Image (cartoon, rainbow, N blue to C red):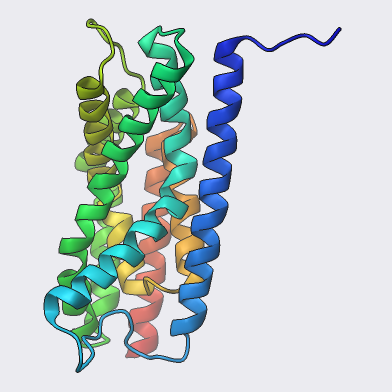
Length: 244
């Protein structure tokens, strides 16, 4: 006779399966977008003649949102598992619903960030090529400072929730928003690096995704963040010398 898995185990397996499918789907769509824009220099920072500014921004937000699912889901999935454990719930259906609400709260932060990223990307693309390596180096320096250390600590603390009140949709939504905001602040320097290297560059996306995962999930997070910052400074310095 086959053993039936406990509800919490079955729920965890279902969450991991859904996360894997969502990750693969977002990666596939991102790859398709990158392939379609490979022959279009300046994308996605161009506003086409037939587009309005709000329309171009909305198109970018849609693309950015899918990209962020692909890039941030590997880091966010462990936080979702910890959230499920912290609620103490055994009602599988209710727990799945609250988990979905927390995930929506988290990714809504990254989706809305695209509204600000679009004009920022246009501004960076318009800068002279010699200035872009300097921005890279500034982002690398930010990785080394106390601000980054504080953001990492706050982000890791937010990933280990504890609830004094019963879990409810409102608390799940607020927890997801809190996680998203902490994650966005912590990733700000590496987001700038991605914008400078090329937001549709698959190598840049992969490198930044790995960097975010390492500094967020390994025990010596601050040391890893500092090493990443040194690497970013070195890349910026190399680009600057090449431009000169």
